[in-house]
Image 1 (cartoon, rainbow, N blue to C red):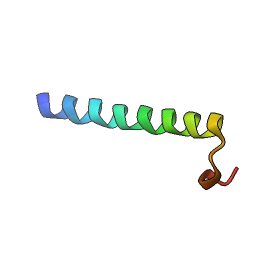
Image 2 (image 1 turned 135 degrees about the horizontal axis):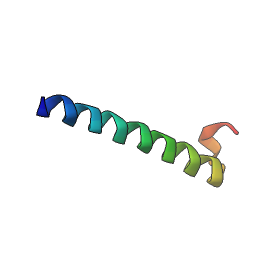
Image 3 (image 1 turned 90 degrees about the vertical axis):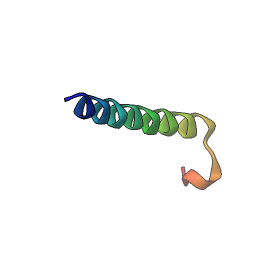
Length: 35
């Protein structure tokens, strides 16, 4: 059961990281983002 909770927490952390990266790229307006 402990492993399942670890995987869930890891996936949530990855999703939050991706969202944070999207926001950071959007604020900076980096050229490679395309917008």
